[in-house]
Amino acid sequence: MSSLALYRRYRPESFAEVIGQEHVTDPLQQALRNNRVNHAYLFSGPRGCGKTTSARILARCLNCEKGPTPTPCGECDSCRDLARNGPGSIDVIEIDAASHGGVDDARDLREKAFFGPARSRYKIYIIDEAHMVTSAGFNALLKVVEEPPEHLKFIFATTEPEKVIGTIRSRTHHYPFRLVPPGTLREYLGEVCQKEAIPVEEGVLPLVVRAGAGSVRDSMSVMDQLLAGAGSEGVTYAMATSLLGYTDGSLLDSVVEAFATGDGAAAFEVVDRAIEGGNDPRRFVADLLERLRDLVILAAVPDAAERGLIDAPADVLERMQAQADVFGAAELSRAADLVNEGLTEMRGATSPRLQLELICARVLLPAAYGDERSLMARLDRIERGVNFSAAAPAAGLPALGYAPGPE
Image (cartoon, rainbow, N blue to C red; front, side):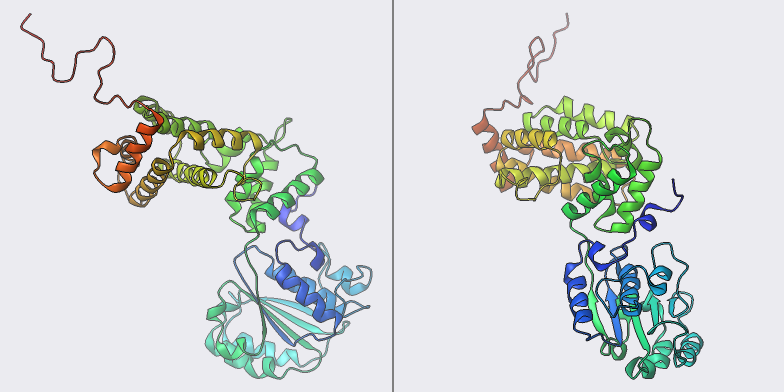
């Protein structure tokens, strides 16, 4: 098995392999077909979404012996040099602007840029983290970016395009990259796991997609970590939740059902189990808020799963549908609002567990509040016939206010 990181082992080698960026790759391929390639490009977007990879693919397309072409042949010297594990090309120069963004570096680049390519059609500069180039450095590059020789191409890649000075931006074709949609990312990760021949339990991939937050590289790094620690049974859901720090679904089910039935004892017992199990209270509240968000959507859109609004395994969806049916719409909305407010209050809290318990108390006791949403939540409970016996004595216990006699 190769020791290369997963995101390097499966780095795309053509625009067709880049996922979730069709709004960028399709126009670029059409420009290559029409032989209308600009002298300078600006690729911007969040980290790990394919900017540098696309810059390398564009360089490969431009310098292919059969090119410029949208589909590199993969057989010529240039294509092999710029392949996934190739040695690199002397005519495609990658510069990290974080460490080479000064005016002296820009002058050095400008002087070397006028020399023709050694073996390829074009000399291509890929300037990564372009927002780190200083204003003086950009001004030193301005003339060569504005009027480069025929053999010269520039590709700037950055996460902060607004920091690239306007005079440079105006001379480039700007392509904004986006975060990859969860469904596309989950499907891609599933294909990678099949190629790696390691079984992955249902429910793991949504966690990985959530941890990656739309970044392909971040998601692949998380998946790599899980695959590296997989045993003979593969990557299990319990292992993924433990390693990634997410709350186990059974705890969320328990606390949501406790809210729905007004069972304070069960709710606080779940909190105790979560804390004793080493869960971070803030993470627990964030996961609970996400579960309530899913329930709000399911209550409003019963076929939310078919529409792609919720990403979860079939058995979890079935449980969530049952939970959404038990809750009233007003009570569910109120619970989500209170958990959201509590999560905001937990930032910087000295006692996160106490804050978590107070959140549960607020959700369980709408009668303690006189606002409109609490009133609607109480009406929901009355309509559902749920008996919240905060004031009703349990069997065998004295009534509220009872004081035993001297005997």
